[in-house]
Length: 380
Ligand SMILES: [Fe+2]
Image (cartoon, rainbow, N blue to C red; front, side):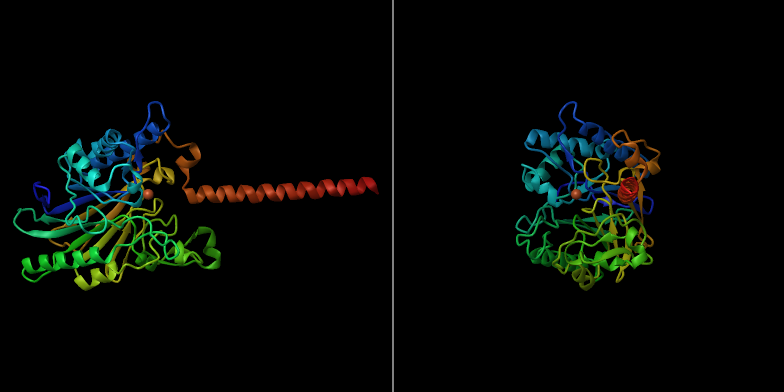
């Protein structure tokens, strides 16, 4: 564990800002990507200054570069809005963080070198993935650990793509989680320490927050991914937020959710990966919440890029307050998006395109029919 001051509640509250899928990369001078990066920085600077989080968590697919100097520049850029305000930072890795020329282990070192207030560490280097760890949070008096944060690597793509496109949390990681949680329980007089879980790829149970779309709902639905791809879905009743794409979880259920239920400490879990989704809802007593991308370089529905804030109260820790804050809601103006993307969501843009194709097709058919009719009349 890194030798840093313990995280703690302030005046009874602890606020975590989750930043999903920045997909930052090294920009060459004059590249159009610089404008996209500028929009991302604008969002993060405003979010940190207005929301005043006690911890920022990057939810994976954070950044990449092809050499160490460039990776330092990328890390410096994405951590700047956080470091400028001296806010503790933690990260989990996503599948795209593996596309970087720098190993995940070295990336962790670079983060720590670029920003001293960096909390993620590799608890057990032998475990599958990198950066699996937990962070304890003390009460406002700094006397007692009252919250635990799990940061877990959801790994990369599956080795056998016949069974799943995405990999899953491996058995050794789940074993480590259960053992560590039970040790903490023992140290806490036999009571589990309430916890939140942060991971890049969502668990399969996200589909429990959706329901199959009825026929008339199809235009407003999304197609499922992988094993769920034969159906279209909408949000189930009571689930808040936006469903912009089918959750791209692994087709193999790793058993993480069941481990949470068995251990009894996890109150809520927060995911990135699906850039368009920002819904949140309870399944079997556990909050599952998506974080949209906060970037502008990856696929995004424009001004709905945003961050998620989680607020906990030490006197009622199980009452998780959470909501998304989108770019537009901060009153910001995008320089990188065109007028259509700036004003419509991706799903609306797709519908506009589909409607214009249908209208174009109908116009062409009617025109062709009219021409054919006229030619026929001339012949007669
Ligand atoms: Fe991503």
